[in-house]
Length: 136
Image (spheres, rainbow, N blue to C red):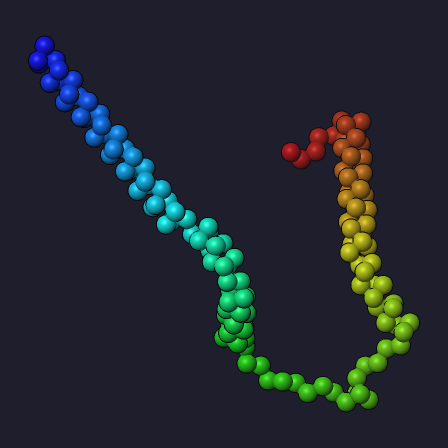
């Protein structure tokens, strides 16, 4: 009997220690998970001080635009008399042509596809009726 109570006490102590260890592991895991959650950290930082983040991002964008912009020579604008001046009608026509061009391309391609499809099917039917063999 004394043996069983000793084993029970050891088993109880072992269970208690494993539960305490499991709880400590859970707490450590939660701390590590919070520490590695970068998006949540960024969201908290931006919410806590939005003006600094906006100013900082604007400064970085400005610096980047200066850093990556090319140094081109500035071309002087031609005199007004040398500029090509269009009237209202010609400007409107140019705009209309620019807007119609994609639709005209699509329409032309569809017409061409239909024409070629009809030519191929007519040719295949003609060979079938005369008994000619086409290249395969």
